[in-house]
Length: 313
Length: 144
Ligand code: SF4
Ligand code: SF4
Ligand code: SF4
Image 1 (cartoon, rainbow over the protein chains, first blue to last red):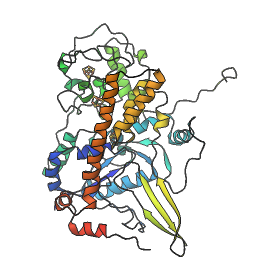
Image 2 (cartoon, chains in turn blue, cyan):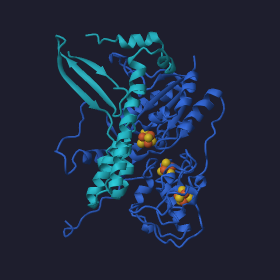
Image 3 (spheres, chains in turn yellow, red):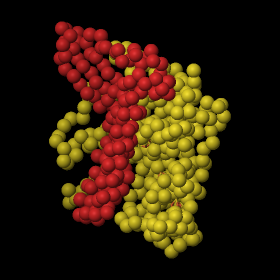
Image 4 (cartoon, chains in turn brown, red):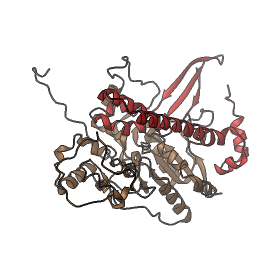
């Protein structure tokens, strides 16, 4: 018997589970060391017995628990609490789980208002928000550690398969996993020429300047080229072929690994980073986007509703 | 009292779902529901984002097929800006779409279906499941 592992997905996209599969060849070795006892992406193990006639949610006991996705409704919460109860070590996998991820953008409106609006977009037929036998919504989207104790966080959208393999192997071997603690910039090979003459950042409507026949380390830093690149305020870990993933595709970082320090604020940190480079942060067109991946923990809140005057109406 | 056959959760798909089949007193199907248990609301939270950022947001609609969302939103953004991709750009997109189809099928067959559908021993052992438990799963008949 290997080390038992239970896996669950909550308010998520299943990209984190695909990242587990993308471990590739080493996964075969890892599967010799662990036994999945529950993992909806691969196994048909049901919540209420295989016939669905049970009364209680059944998550089997496991040494390691992995949960992806954030918490946005009562079912997510119930499953998360069951996972915490049944697993000795609980890992939050992916930025949805660690910092709310993209779904936490909904916190700019709150779940109820956001879902209501989703069901009444200008180009869909009017219909009611379903309320029959679906779980009740929470007020907003939460990261896992806002609801239960989390032992290891492994951010990334999606997370790097290599780091998932490292964490699982480390747990099986009974040692601490080795995870990067730096920023995306610290792992970025682009050329930095010091404080430049860029005063404003621009929208990504034109490509960066680079010679496509030359390697990444010949390209000038994208932020120094005037593109909003969130490398300075984003946790390292995505680099697979030398450079950070997006940078190696010659596009700016959007912050998908969440803040460098676990409880950092990517929006405030980015404003600081821009200011210290002499760039006017007012040139950032959509400041809320800086919290695109980390809007839980109360960072993204509903905007105050502006009262319109009679003339504005 | 009506009996409900509850399939919860539906596994190996993205889109957290539950199927509830309601039976009448004679055991015939009276009604059936597909409940989608979780809605993230991309339609709402892309509001206010710059259009060119949308393809890098909506690809997280589904981690099993992110390319399709990425490519179709690119098309939508082209429409907003009133531009058409160059012939090379167009070919590149088609190539991406084709690669995504290949990836999808491999993923579906080998990782999502095979471990459960066939008694291929190696696969089962790799996914930590005994042949016995697999047989039990395959013989599963809803008790009516
Ligand atoms: S972190 Fe990214 S890949 Fe993982 S579930 Fe969330 S959106 Fe999907
Ligand atoms: S700002 Fe972006 S391009 Fe520049 S060093 Fe950091 S990650 Fe690299
Ligand atoms: S460069 Fe930034 S946005 Fe791109 S994968 Fe890395 S952390 Fe994520």
